[in-house]
Length: 329
Ligand code: NCD
Image 1 (cartoon, protein in one colour):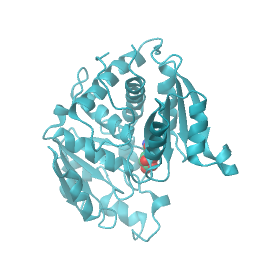
Image 2: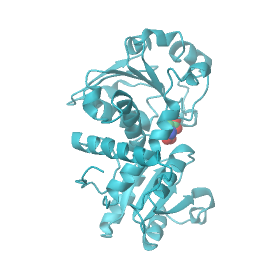
Image 3: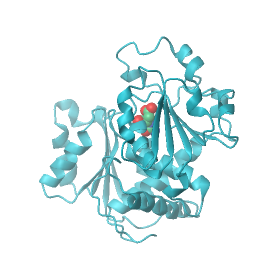
């Protein structure tokens, strides 16, 4: 396990993550990937610590992944589902968090449909002088740091399985295609990928990719480009990240139809030919099959890293919980 020089108590956003922090997460995740390949894939690292998963919004993979990661580290886990909680009786979110604090929770993993909730809970925990760490598991359209870190781990591990590190992505071309406007995954990925020195090309319809995204790449080693056609983003790309069209967040008429979107921007076997021969395709899931990506390409293991992303997710989340939990080996 790399020596633990981690000082960040809460992980809310990647906007101010340092090069050292990215590499620490990647190296620690590589150690946990090795643990997960053992016959007994479990370590006593967080024994006695309590990890509470507070998910105020539906989730399949992120929630299960954090739960498994905490269990593989021997932490005690508490699971909360908004629909069956005291929130339905009028309790405030901060009071719910304080209830978990009073039970001795060490780390709170929080997902909420409103941007800013994990930060608000972290502020409250600090105000109360608790030592609780808050990890943002996706807040509204703001950020989803653990998803971007697992994406980073998946692609850097492919380039060097023994020593994943961010410098491996310097000058690589990465396209992010889909509903960027509503995507917290895209926002976190823009921070992490531009920090590596990669060329990041965003592509979508003008309605789902407003010009203000250009400001995200400023002052970063990598370069950020915006395209309202998909082809220039795909040309010679090393990696393509596809994003779900978040229909539940589209309150205005942003697209003529999903069929038309697929025709102009969908990642298909034909379009992928514009990329490098060895291109790999990612998707954070859940996928609208046949909309942002064609169904056959999604299942083609020559191109698709989708299952690797899910597998990487457990190792990366173990790394984050380990680093936040004080890294007691
Ligand atoms: C993403 C999310 O919830 O932001 N999914 C995930 O965490 N794996 C992306 C999405 O919902 O489209």
